[in-house]
Image (tube, rainbow, N blue to C red):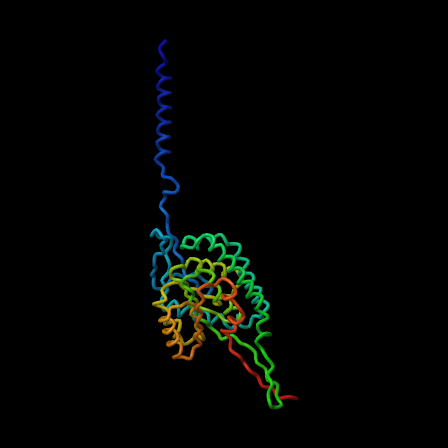
Length: 317
């Protein structure tokens, strides 16, 4: 019996539609083959995330040469604006009581721990092994908790009642220096960065930090943690860019009270010390090759950025 031509046509149409749908599915690119858009990381000044005023960026590449992010190349003007923000935030932060500073540091630790996997992933993509990255993130959380505990105790350790040969009481106490500029370690994108920021702000200073040029991702992610952790605007300001371009500014700016160089580059250390000497700025050099463990922390890290104030008071007055 001959088939109804209308039925045959309908079946043929269904076959054609099915083949078209199958071909369309096959033509779609795989999810992994999609074009990726590299994130552009901004700088952190005064509690905000502006782009660099220079408009310059540099590509951050992984071991295979693929671009993983675009990083702001901070300028001297960015640094000057960060110093203004740090100076503006100093009065509020230095008048915050020690207990509250400790609570804020503890809050930073909590927030960082909550985003721990993100920081591990960022360290891994920058060339750190997964095991070392996990260790570094855990050590960073512990370091913040460590300094949170010291916030209301270092004064008792380093202050003194001094014996004098006259009828006076003589007291020595520590006071924050003011604005601290920090050249962060080049080989430790998170732990080394935080190990220098934490003691400075524990001691009621504000700071401007230049992150590692080769490992900058965690620095701006850490700024996001700071922004959501009750840290007042201007207390911590983070720039990315080149030490070759900005180290001189960090050491010579007249409204910076001390400069920390965390690295072992002898020529860079000499440059920083020479420029800082021109305006009698304290220079602190930290050359630890490893920031993990006891060598990367201690109350003397807080004392490095403190001045000693001595008060004489007549007996009986």
